[in-house]
Length: 370
Image (tube, rainbow, N blue to C red; front, side, top):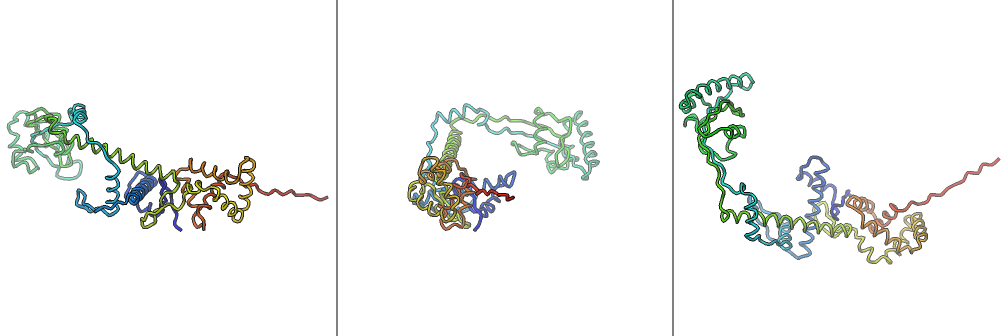
């Protein structure tokens, strides 16, 4: 029987978690496995909820044109059914707009030119030679700035040499970061006094014109703000909803079981059912323990009698204490203890009692004869 772990009240085969971990890169293998376990548990809880609601769903295409799987469609249907958020009103959108005036602006536009002095090899000597050429050109441009276009046509190693080195109208991100940073330090009409290095070579930069971005009118960006707020509210609501499903599952012990092929069924273990009919369980357990583990059965009766309570009450108390304080790791150990048993529920109760009781060992006295 394959090893299992319990995550958020869902019993998962370790082999399935290991396979899913490939889709959750993390800083460590353990982090990837934890993320995979939570993802599989959440998926199982949502699919089970879809079954409870009697939902069906047609698959749809995502933004990249890929078709959903039937399970993904059901998960989407559950969230659509169970989660509703109010559309933000104008005042909420206005607060966002007024609180971040620089956020809603047209991008700054830059018109610039350059002369590229590319190295003739990959070693540092070639790079030093290219920089020397750039410095000579910069010195000449300092005295004759009008020669920039002509110098670009004869000296530059960039295709822009055909248009006098002009790079045209640029938006943020159009150029290598170091080149953009070099242009940011210049005033309109100014040529840099030092060349800027990029992976392409040494750039002699000239800023031709800078057009600062303008703040967009509220009416223009209100739909964008509204969509952002609604999406954020929906994500928060979805997180709360899934957390609630997981909390309910944990309270039930092991609410669901996922097989190695991904099928979801009711959990193999429900201590809640045992608690609801404790007298019958105690009767079964006492007989079963007498046959399976007589030493533990005797010890349990001793502890119950010492506490002045009946066997059934004692068992109920120990199960309740476990269920209230157990985390995923404790449930995993309990499931492992029950695997292969003809009656997993009774085997689990036996494991709980074993963890609480120390069976008294028989003692022997050696008598020395003279």
